[in-house]
Image (cartoon, one colour):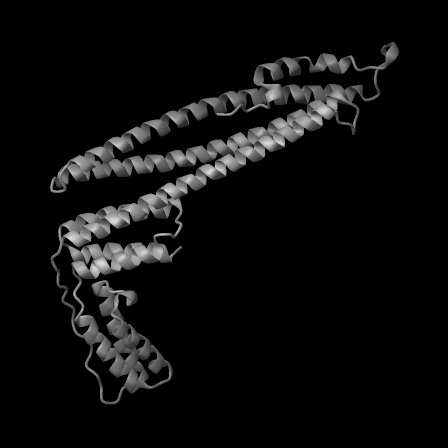
Length: 347
């Protein structure tokens, strides 16, 4: 952690310097030991400086303890996460009880990391506030050292140095945050590739049976066609089929039904919806279907930047997806894929 006080005023030096302020303030009288006209104001300012000095030194010591605690906790969680990952990689996927326990530990570590991240933000805010308080204290010191309205060359240089140091710190913090985001995005992309590889190596199909939609009417109306469309959309939702999952011809039928309904051509809208329903019936939610969805997801969103919370959700869903795909539970794996799509689209 960088020094909380400017280089020229480290804590021990500042303590000694401020202790002498009441004395030096008293020595700045005119010749002949005549009291200055503003002597009461100077004495009052000296008292304020003394109080600020004590408070800032105490806060600096407290922040140093917080920093050490946060860094120790961060190192511990990193070691624990690495150990859990290594143990997960070494045990069989069929050993469900052991994997469930390790995954629960993994979630606990993630929750602790989120808590630690909040603690670091609180620490940074306290540190920034302390910096502002120190700058105010230095301004008060300057008023005691010199006539009102003047500033020495050294003070101007020190102020410039402090500003440059603050800018450098902010740039470093920003670079660190960008690095962290890039690492999380790389982890998500890697997990997506692993999921696609897994899909390529396993098969099986799970068939989902859904009641057919209402039969077409000889004289379709706006109400009957709207009801038919809701039935078709509900069937797609129930089976976990997104519009992007439809074959090109079926997507055209979906668009045609909307356009015909809008133009009040209810017969054409009903015909398009019935054909779309048959196309949906012909879709099997199996390995190739889910693999195609994951390929589209990876192609469309692999470069999308997510915040820390959504990135964590994606990684959790990918882990669950891999387990379900390994067991051939494609209907459930498809639901996890749809949840990932929803997270990306909500950005």
